[in-house]
Image 1 (cartoon, rainbow, N blue to C red):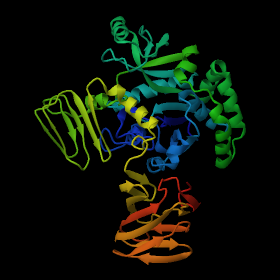
Image 2: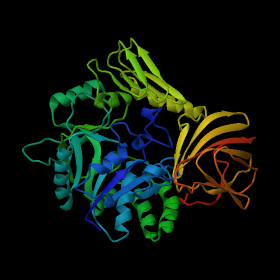
Image 3: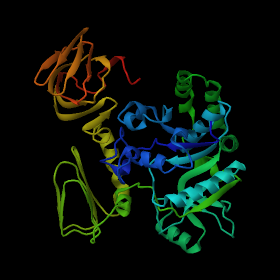
Image 4: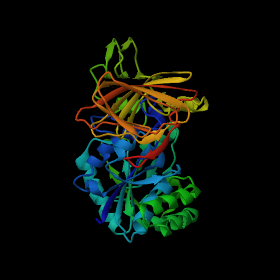
Length: 465
């Protein structure tokens, strides 16, 4: 086991980046800046300091079993059964190693940030790692570029040293206070990136949050097989206080130091932030997808397959998905989360899942849904196989559009080619497989008094869900 381990926090919901970010596919799994998802980019920029095999992802149990299963698959994971903020997540990672007799330096990183100057980031990382080896707790402070009110601030006066001691924290300030901080100097944006030894942070947790330390001790005592560990998590982790590592632990720590970081950092937390880092034309416009824009200024447009046309607008963000369109004025994107809250209060699905849902075997797209029916397009990758399952309240009709389907249906197995079909009655145990070399596409028509995705009973699953 290496003395260096990266712990990537990937449990956030990204509500301010709706409608692209959804509960089952939040922003850390999306490609918002280039061809890599934010999670993949976070892992990639650690090389050569920390190799990929020394990366541990802390995420929700629901993410690892839902649509995010695919991007999470390559990594070692700790699965939280309940959301409890960053202090329990970080303490859990430290407990994971200490319970196994290991005490590595942990590099704690959010999964959903952008860093432009990777060499500068590596230099900061190496400085922080050396300090952590001495038992110090280290945080990264971002040199402010303006009086931002969406970030917390950290005060650390630099008097010639490369690693000043943290003096105080300030939660998200108002505009006047943020401007005063910039004028005063010595204030940094709180990046949420930390470096410390597992034993050092747990010592600080024990001093500041004894109730959390007690929960972690109970989990650590049950460490054994993966199944035993997850059972212990489900039993004890929800008892953790829901508190950030900054407020719960670091504000009370006496050995916290700051690395001043000028690394081209963005938390990409809003559509305004996405516009800020995006490539833009001479008029400040950033367009992606099937977009036509005329006489626009300072505008962000993100489209998919449908045409999005914008004319004569300035300072707005337009984001289109197959089932939702967002139009937000510049400066208002912090309030997009209010839309998500409203959708949740209506028990709507548009904040939970996309119409196209990724699965470990491929993907499905909901084409149409109404009372008593749902129509899907299903794509199964070569070698992919759905779970052996049944439904209590719906039947299914499958028509093969392309590829070759191997169908298990109530104990029998058949092979279907293009333009062939089959019927799966209510209650029948069935499975769909693609044993061929080409993608399999089918159209599925569900009929029943309930066609929700939770009407499923699994008997066997190749992917361990």
